[in-house]
Image 1: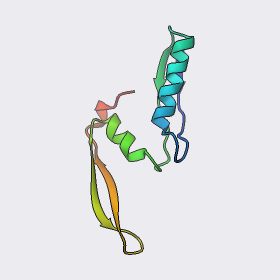
Image 2: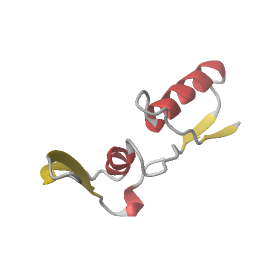
Image 3: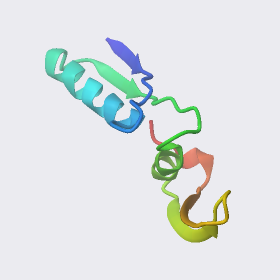
Image 4: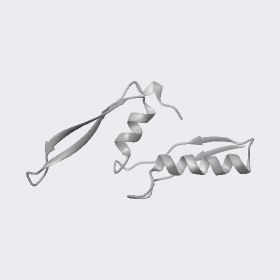
Amino acid sequence: MNIVLAPSGFKESVSAEHVAANMKEGIIWALPEAKVISVPLFDGGEGFTETMVAWTDGTLHSAEVTGPINQQVKAIFGFLTLVGNVRL
């Protein structure tokens, strides 16, 4: 049996990647012979950068920047490796 999981995350609580991992664990427990592929969905919100960096074996970085109301905030950005390295 082939199963594709494509969950979204739960804002401010669980990332799409963790949702997919837990769903996969439950399916494998119930159907050990199943082939499960996880493809977490993102809308560019929370967790998007971290997940794209993880999928491509990229690197995550941060910097202090000036925010929209002239305050210093920490920004997170990532450098991705070749798309061919994506692991599903």
